[in-house]
Image 1 (spheres, rainbow, N blue to C red):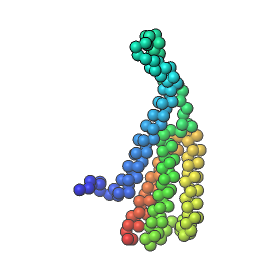
Image 2 (cartoon, rainbow, N blue to C red):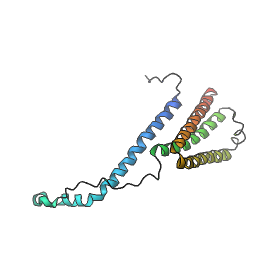
Image 3 (cartoon, helix red, strand yellow):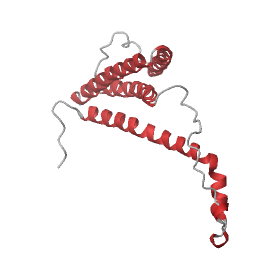
Image 4 (spheres, helix red, strand yellow):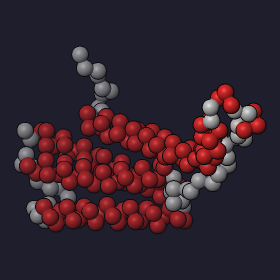
Length: 179
């Protein structure tokens, strides 16, 4: 028996929420592991040399007992937080999902309701180029905004991505309704 979803929450919303939560959870741990490896390799050679000697002949003074240098500077992620980077990626993903959901709905007989995009959706190449341009412009604008106010840039990306979640969900609902 399948688990029940909260009322009013579509499968698509559950999937998008799970993907976003996974991205926010996975990206920081992977980056932290790389940073820890980079920090620990500074004293690795001496530690390996100390343990490579046969144990019966090891003098107590021959073992390097110094603590690893955990204070070693680690290069920052080009000034961007993990959350901000995840939001930039999710912006591109939401644009791709918008393209997919739009063509799914159009394929079922729906009509583009956005008057600015109605003429563009009839030409697949033009539509893809337009959505790529929107994604690129959004990412560049957010990066520019983050130089002055990172919190505002993050809030803006959350708002934009949330709006696209609603649009994509609507497109998929229309496509399902027309089957």
